[in-house]
Image (tube, rainbow, N blue to C red; front, top):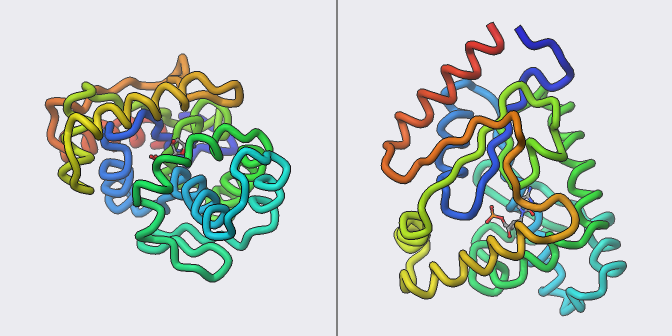
Length: 219
Ligand code: DC
């Protein structure tokens, strides 16, 4: 049995289209644990900055926005400063700019604090992102790094949001490159993460595996 502050945090990291959201949501429903999509937090800050026409390269200005904002990321809704950003954060404008905001260290520090507070408030949860195992919850009881082949990831995004497979594949590759090479908490698997390739597997099968690992470690 693992004893620690984050016995009840399941960290799910991985690149875009690896199946993180689908699997993390299914897992949270199954285990009756809260779910947090940390990518939606970076997307919401990007949305609000664009709405205000702020210069995304002005690190201090965007950090200040992140620190001051009233942000609520729930299962069905993302609200920032009273604006319902649920749909807009998935659009191409936000998607095209979010890596810039996610590379801002001031923004990352603020989001990290909010994510840790969230877990304290709810006594843990299923938390998905890029740096959850490596930086935000290094003592999570279970760390999973989801991957899938680039073709499968592009096809999944097209099935979800529409678009052209070749274009989406190029956009995903660009975003992965930016997310993996940034200086502050880049996308990477933790040495103690369980790496799961979801390319040829059914959702339920992957959820079963993660559930089993979690129960083994906590009961
Ligand atoms: O998972 P997503 O596509 O919604 O993530 C949006 C962006 O935010 C993506 O470019 C990576 C970044 N991100 C991050 O840097 N750290 C996280 N914990 C989650 C997302």
